[in-house]
Image (cartoon, rainbow, N blue to C red; front, side, top):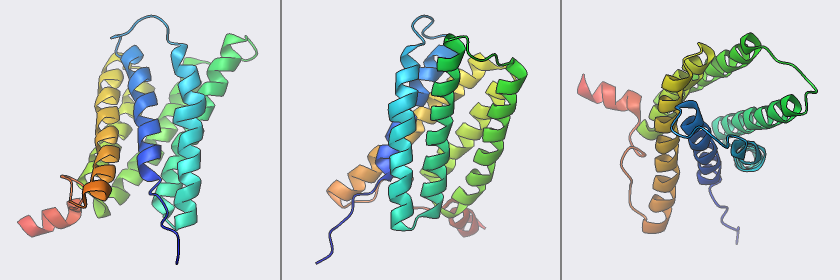
Length: 188
């Protein structure tokens, strides 16, 4: 009898959500001191947990989940290494270089947002707010990007919790079972 595998998406979404929320609280200037707390989260929960989730998505044959979780896990590892090396004065990075990286992740996220039109409303909203967050941060609108990042994190957490809810209670959760593109077609 084959063993049932756990869905890795709630782990990946939770690691993404928590790390994004904490960094976004600093970006929005809701919290103004102690931003180094994000570094450990970036390395392990935002980074490592998402990479692990991505590898399990790969093993289950989910190309979207694999590419998304692995990419965002790598983003958090990049953040971790960059902040660590900056703190050690090993490297110097310009704000233009950081903006270029954020814009590149925004482009990746925009493309993956298009794929979510075939998935569900919850992921569609997560990726919509995430590409907006990346582009706002790339444009230097850090406070606004922080607030949109907070919304992104909360939506990602909702999506993770809704997935677990569906499995535990064997009931559909709002925003998870309807495909955005089909919903639009049904209205026409």
